[in-house]
Length: 440
Ligand SMILES: Nc1nc2c(ncn2[C@@H]2O[C@H](COP(=O)(O)OP(=O)(O)OP(=O)(O)O)[C@@H](O)[C@H]2O)c(=O)[nH]1
Image (cartoon, rainbow, N blue to C red; front, side, top):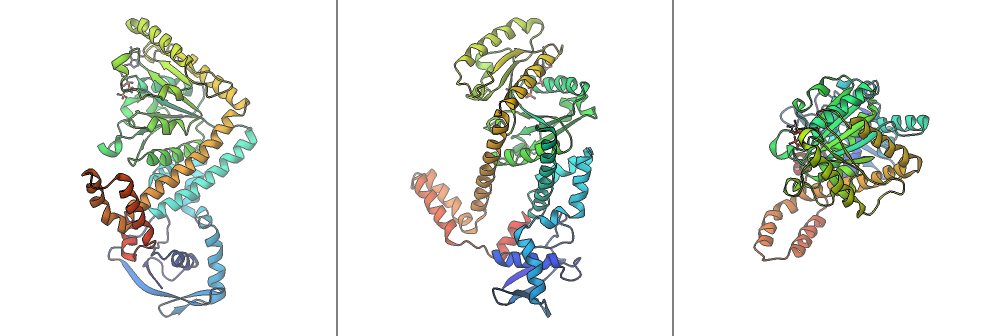
């Protein structure tokens, strides 16, 4: 027996509603229904509830809802395709199809709407987003087979605050669009989850590029977790690629571990540094040089030129001690001036050199495949932690347990074991709790 809430907008139980009920029944959860998967129904006030029971036997299930009974055969026939592939129907949904069509035609509004959809945490919107992403991935796969290479070059860019990232992206992006490329800039800003705004996404940082019709700038706010950086940004990259952007720059401010996460989702990782050393570079994470494929010393102009030369030499010798990660590429250090634009074409030259060498050797392909596996595990990790934190029994004990750990009354390991035992005790949440979770 399950409790099911559905919208008054649904005049009678449609086939998809029945299938969702059966699916819900399978997992012992309650569900909301609406006629549009992108527009979830609010539970407050305008909903009705019905008791739904299953009848028949295991081989031929059927439903009765109130006084209405659904015959065994049709219920079975309706449910099985949906259970096999829950997204099958959503990918054909007009709203998803409309977004997909607009996206592959390169409409900026559709791209913006699609990114907003994948950023949603609502379960029904996420289902629509998954269906859309699947369509885009299939589209990209077809392109890849046709062109025999990925349609976009993904570049990660990081650097300490004040290194000149926005000035560099503005100059570099303009250089690329002037050469006929379409450039997407995704700015990953882990601080946005605490400040409520996205500093990197601020369009005033790149005024010229944000007016350019061949460029698309978008902040990629995070949910404050590494998984948040990973999943949303990752999916936004795929969408930009689907929308025909052939150079995708993923910029990160370098707070926490975000650069390392970004390094795991791009083809090439670029480190931008100012002509300064020692204390001024303290903002730079240890180990970041090891994952860089290219170090760009910015501000190599005017009075700063001698310092830029010195820093270039320092990084060049430091890189000699870094274990090579590629058979065909040694990380380089170059100088640019984002103000005078000197060195910008050379930077692009180095990047395309990296791309063709790693692609021809098969390394780039292997890297992308490996990244897919990393993303999958990151998604699982992210979802498992969310599930754990939302679990009602864990929620009830978590504060007390944290307090005890902090006071030294219990070891962190023992506390974790105790919470994990709570998590394992009751796999199902009550309907009321599930409804609360769905609304979050
Ligand atoms: N001389 C010189 N100054 C530059 C260059 N690039 C950037 N700057 C200056 O460096 C300062 C910081 O530049 P931004 O582009 O805002 O640096 P950022 O890394 O985006 O900084 P955050 O937003 O704080 O992370 C600005 O005053 C720029 O004018 C350059 O190539 N030469």
